[in-house]
Image (tube, rainbow, N blue to C red; front, top):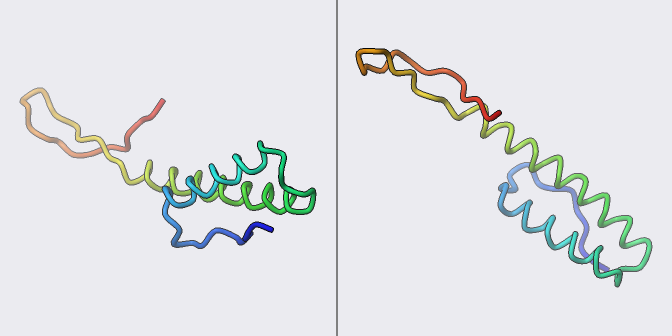
Length: 82
């Protein structure tokens, strides 16, 4: 049985993504018994939410410098990723 635990709040995005990729591979292989597959799926859902939360936090921290017509920085504004 695979070790299944909720993601730690201090788990980095990269660590969570790596664990999520491991889970996806295990599930796609079809080798996990039903109960393990269910537990892995639940952990994967928690990791996905954790990764999304980390990405949102990073997005909010990114700022774009606004440069005026004179070439001088006027301030910052939230970055747009759309």
